Length: 92
Image (cartoon, rainbow, N blue to C red; front, side, top):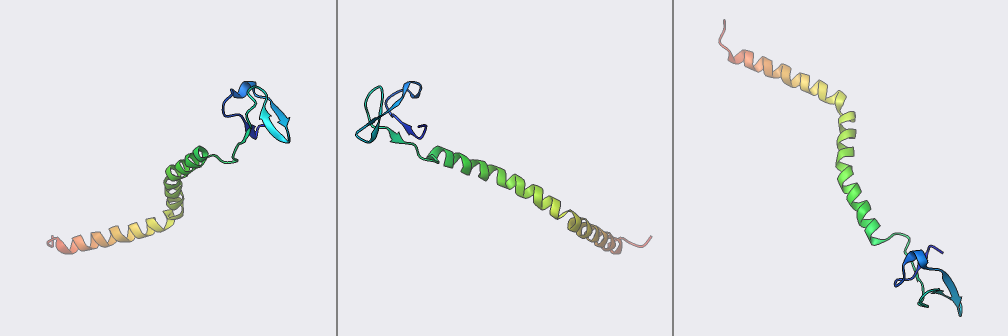
């Protein structure tokens, strides 16, 4: 019965009754409304969680995957930089 609720009564004191095949509130007699499976607030919360956590997860995975490539490229870059600077220096 948690799928149905009365919009006017406190959820603690609600109990459903059947009246002509419809579920009604036992306190006020209003028709019970069916709760949606996923509410709009939950959808927005999930969207915010994924939007804030995805960049962090992406950075972690990309740093793990690219560790081997970056070291080789970085070494080649610094090695060529040293060679270029040696050419620019006057002979000793």
